[in-house]
Image (cartoon, rainbow, N blue to C red; front, side, top):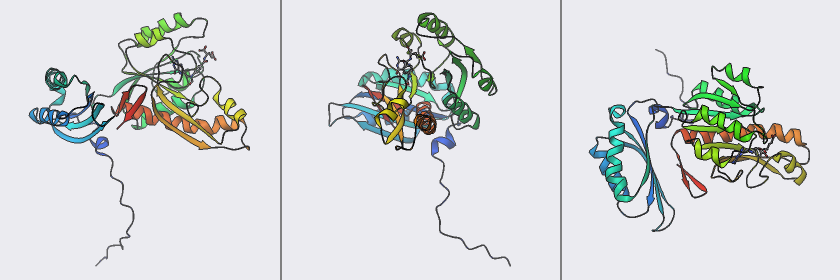
Length: 308
Ligand SMILES: Nc1nc2c(c(=O)[nH]1)N[C@@H](CN(C=O)c1ccc(C(=O)N[C@@H](CCC(=O)O)C(=O)O)cc1)CN2
């Protein structure tokens, strides 16, 4: 008779969050809403989803103030046949609940990865990290293209099977370059990621692209906005450097912050050391921010975000 090996009390294997196991379930939906706060919102959404035959899997909500503020809610639900009925469900929700509460909302299928374009200049660690995580299945997205104002990364990007477009862009040819980039992006993407793209984006581009942009800034904002933050950090003698992922607005590096992180530094590190140490933080921060956006976890409130 064999005896079972002694079991040892230890941490149980962490179970994957439900969104991971059901992320590829064709019947898994996400509803992200915000509206003026008032009684009855949760009930109205729950009643609507139940009436549609949906089973709520997770529900997170937040009110910005005690009454009179803004109400935010993220709901994940399971609804057999969602793919076939999503558009009708969206129209019905808009005409009933959203109309009654003057609600802004998105209703998405987890099964349909978002179309993502990545823009980059010469620095490779962020774009290659995103492509590597995508290939491993950590980031559920469809990277439709990489656009760069330099040719340096073409071979590396194409090795992932992703189209690479070189569009030379400097401050001197900005309008022409942006027009070419908009021709590539308009109507083809759900998200643009600036993975160390070192050109200032004009308001014209932001108005015309038809998708949100996420940028990774290589400092712990609001410190060291603009170019060369690591040299500025070294000069200032800071004890923490960091990275910030934020939505892009016309105000340079001042858009709604999605994620940040830091690492300790001291007098022993020179600027190249800070660049090297900072790169690890940039990659981690950008991938978390992109993943949360892909999972419809990020709501924008003024110049801030609520991340469910
Ligand atoms: N409208 C916006 N555009 C961009 C943002 C933003 O938040 N809003 N973020 C930057 C990224 N960035 C830092 O993270 C940054 C990139 C470039 C510059 C800059 O001064 N660029 C010069 C040209 C530099 C060069 O050619 O080497 C310029 O564009 O004139 C500052 C900050 C991306 N764009």
